[in-house]
Image (cartoon, each protein chain N blue to C red):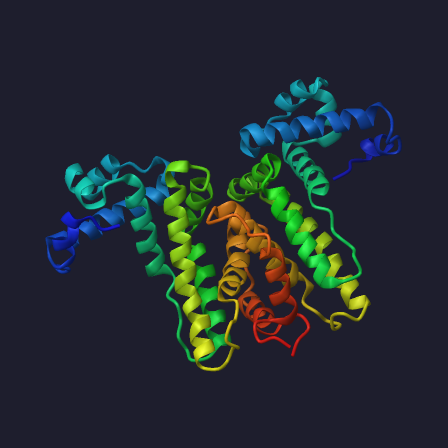
Length: 198
Length: 198
């Protein structure tokens, strides 16, 4: 993601470059909420952030990278990966936070943009990177549980995080009904112990 | 869904009314694939099916009911609920059939229409009925397994079918990557026995 030219920018996290980055990503998130990813342009985001268009091009290069960075930033703020020391509590807290995030205007915009973006060849790679990154982050919960001896070595972490996140995403995206308060805990119970129980 | 006026229609499944119904639902499915649910109109579907607009109004009443009926018909054709006598085989076969259906143009159109339809208040109720109906049908697999003694009484069938279908839907809708051939089986394994194993 980082071009060599932008390296010095990252070494001054509190400086003007950091403020520009924050303003641009906030403007991009606003555009995502109001118009969707397909209508996001670098010119539009630059104007909204009050920065020069060439500054945005120098920092992000393409609109696809800008969209991806805005999504990752929005998603990082929205869904922290919990670390309670107990895998059931972690999974339940993560699914709860995801449901709450997807109920916000930004979360809804990100999820809907993802559905439409999946059909756009220019954005497809950015979306795949976005999801891979999110799922890898969430899989840390499973790895920690293996390290603590709560789950066996060789646990299918990739399928576990998809089983946890997807029902919450489907509830939000497909609108059949909002998740009940006990829904995250019911998901975690089946994922950990199965329908056959222990 | 059925008005009293349409009852006699249903009693002649092989007659002209049945052919009209089939033609209208096929035309509606074509419109869903090509233009999406938001742009489906009764006039457009009637013209495409070569039937009178008032015939469609008399049979379906509203565009929302026509959309729902077309989705249910398309979905019934696309995703049979298996009955192999073994719950793991049933769950794996259902997730496989769902993945194959969502890879077809009609399946993609239905899923994308669902995401956009969830935001349309006029369609929200039709979508909720669509999903409730689909999930209830799939839950029969769980009930049969309880009846056979494969799963304990009181098994959380509602969560089970959402855990099975949602990861397949998310793969299709969010485009992070198409399901691998072993993905349905891995989902079924975790849903039945959990990450902790037996």
